[in-house]
Image (cartoon, rainbow, N blue to C red; front, side):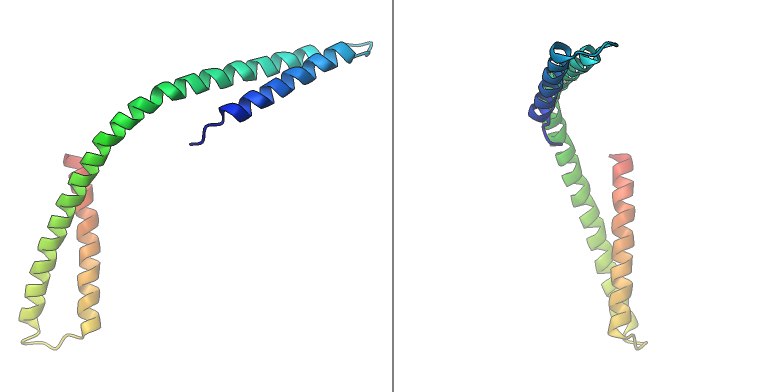
Length: 132
């Protein structure tokens, strides 16, 4: 997420200045809306500074938490890759055994291997996300 503090601060200053100018130069006989515009600019300025301060505090916490999630994701990726490799080896042995007795087209065999690896990878990631 981009830091929008400078843009928000400049817009709030501009709104406040426009409200003050409208208040000073307003010659209407009715109610002058310059006060409301200046007040809204002030509220926007307070909001932008508070959000900037809280986002600075949260950055260190997010960096620390992202390290933990990166380690966890690396562990899950490793375990899922190991499970997929075991499935691949078993499938290759089964296909080697079956090709001695049945003629299997190469495209079909590769398609079966690919689909089974995709399914096993998805299932193993869900399993390890649930239990780790």
